Length: 110
Length: 115
Image 1 (cartoon, rainbow over the protein chains, first blue to last red):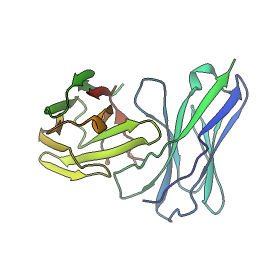
Image 2: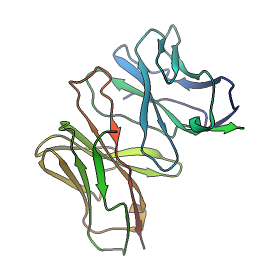
Image 3: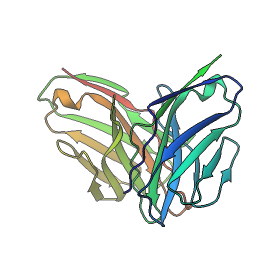
């Protein structure tokens, strides 16, 4: 499976938007882009996924570059509860394995 | 929340002893996974199962074995625990037919310390 590159850590002020970047230059045409997050002392949880088009759901938005070599997870108004490790993952649409990597640790400053 | 439990939640053991961790689900999902999480490495897949008695290796399977005799239970065994297996272990489940994104649902984790 193709791998992803994310910054180790980021900070954001509370109630401001957060843009979490992910590079995936070796992405293939059948790879979906997934984002999961892991709150402290919990297992990861699904946030959002996409293939080619930008996606929105109640938790976040996913912006995918036109060449699909990068994507950005957008939290529109960060809250203290959004402090977590965010993982960007590629998965072939036929595959059932996820490779999580080390993710981005987001700190939200009150 | 998905019905996934892990037992025990915490365990301290000594080097060389066998250890079995249990993952139990009430969702009837076909796929089950075992991950370990260590500082600096994120989550890494150990083994997974795609049905009763059907299992396969992940990226860090050495020193671990698994068994799945029932849909709801997936056991992870360390035959002879080593200090390098000190970690937090997460179980996950998924049902590929439910949605294209094949969401994985995670259990609460088991913290294992090998002295």
